[in-house]
Length: 431
Image (cartoon, rainbow, N blue to C red; front, side, top):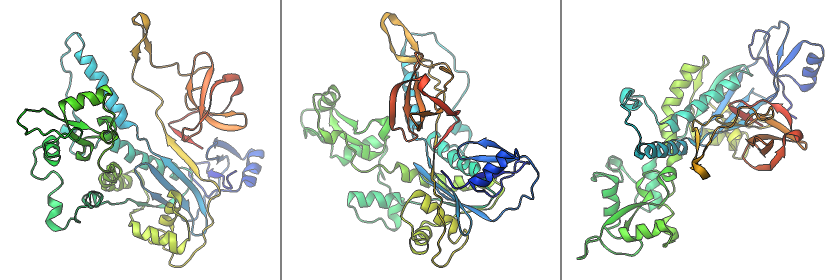
């Protein structure tokens, strides 16, 4: 059980947390009420002085996981790891597939109603996959500020040299000076032209050249699908028309045609895009000071002064205690939180009306289930055989699929009579 209960004043202002024993007395005496189960938060029903101590929130920004740690100079009050959504690209790609299929069907002509190309109207436009992660960073910080009296926010946003990373992976010389003005595709019109030149106009499967006496049509092949791998040059390879057709028919099963040439730099690119925007939006969204330290300072603070192993929450604690936070300069013992929360943002609704697969008799099954099935909603936190888990899928017959917050399967087909509701679902799962 967590050793801290978070407290909100009668006026709605966050106060310093108290012990579970004190919270129990306040609840028994009807001086407080429970407003949130996870993390356990109570609200006072009487007036108080609202005295608080300096509390600094450290945030280790990331592309897949955010580390969050709120602490005083001597004790960590809150620690959490936020798992960011990485399904936006796949969802948008699936939507594009459905739209193209609908346009190719024999249907009535519909005039265009409006120009919905946002990037042509707004110069500050960001890709939805980037936008949602920036919003999750800001929302996570606001949620902590709602239960603790945060006096300062310190956010570390990493910076990566993508051209240096690519050069090291390819075994090329380290770029210097003007090399940074000449990217990988410098001098080429598009990705296809560059990939054909890079592969010497030769099929990487059978070795036939497009410049031979017998004309050969060359294709540019995605090693990973565009939905998952994108359109980066390292995700392309040159194949002749015959090999490309055989590969997609399953006749050729060469593993190298499924693996991209270098490790994806999508996460590093995201961090470079979101750095400036995150700090600007955060300063506009919260009314408390926001600072931005450097990564090497955080590492030195964590290893030399706090003596902590490498984790997202430990990095966040080092950020809060470091130069831009409490400014510790000698080895310090900060009492860590005995419970690290896991937060996972989810979406409740799918706008797709029907299943893609058409059943026998031309029946198109609806994709959306009722909001409540036997009084349980998607992502409700339930108790099953003494274990807390989440409703991940439901059947109208009363069978439920249960998983933990990280997606690990607990059991499928559990009857609704064996479940006890703990918390109604929100857009953020917390465990």
